[in-house]
Image 1: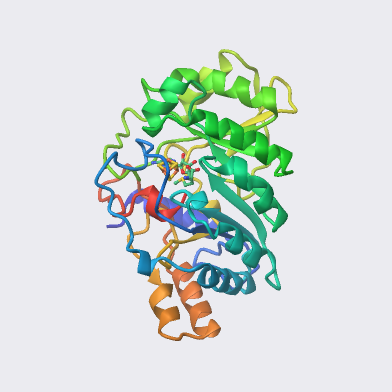
Image 2: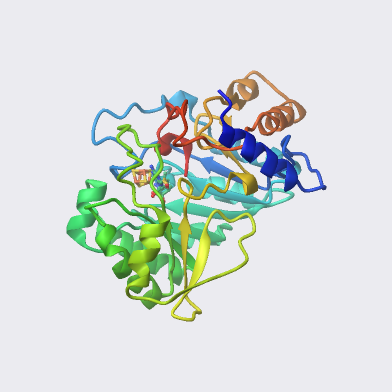
Length: 348
Ligand code: SAM
Ligand code: SF4
């Protein structure tokens, strides 16, 4: 169904369409430079906004790509203009061969800037090894520094391990470190300023992410989600925030904290969609290419690859997937449907 907002977004996108083209340019002129790669759907936590507590339907292991397969697909994407790759999950540290994936990608002929998004469990023992084989940057998800609240959100008692992981990542030179936090009303929304104080104290760059309808339990509620405006109001009660002008393709809008140099960001995907500037494409752990977090359609790279497709054939599938990208998500509009895959099986 086409809505008035779709048409509005279409117009805005065409007006802002860049004149340059690349291998991965969609019909609105958005050139894609960023690939998110989910290396597993398994996880060591059960964050309530992401996964159900029990009854998770896992991908069958024979469908999950090998390290060699991931490296091959990332290499093809890099020949098509991808410049930044982020490994994510599920929890990427659940893969014992993560170091092989990082090593392979960082030794490609056109290596991308390589980042990792992790919950930090197990990071303490692996940060140095990952940095050594070429990992450049890291984002660690941390929704609370109160052990009880952390346990309530993640359904696991592991805050100490995350804090140890942060120290190890810093010592390994994975710096600066970004922290991701999702606020939930009545759970950790009152902790916004405390999280910011913690981040400023240790030099981490904190970014709040608005909760999106990608939870395994399908319990997301637009009326109760904590919006950017509310996050800023909470932070402003204890800190002076000054907008930072430049944004580029970053999904986060940023503010200087108390005059800087510390900054805080908000990724307001629901209340302030940034689809017009989106330059991302996503590869799932089972080799499905998605042109949007909220896409209902996927391009099957795994089957093509395992049936003997050449690099050129696979490149064509990347190009077709990006070409089929819509103007933006339609959260909150009539006809919006939450994708069947939860965030943990897409990769955030
Ligand atoms: N397990 C890793 C982690 O938590 O960082 C990587 C995967 S996780 C899916 C990536 C990011 O997505 C995390 O920062 C998490 O907080 C965020 N996320 C998960 N579900 C979300 C949702 N429903 N809305 C917004 N962000 C979500
Ligand atoms: Fe696991 Fe990350 Fe989802 Fe939490 S947000 S359940 S750590 S995949």
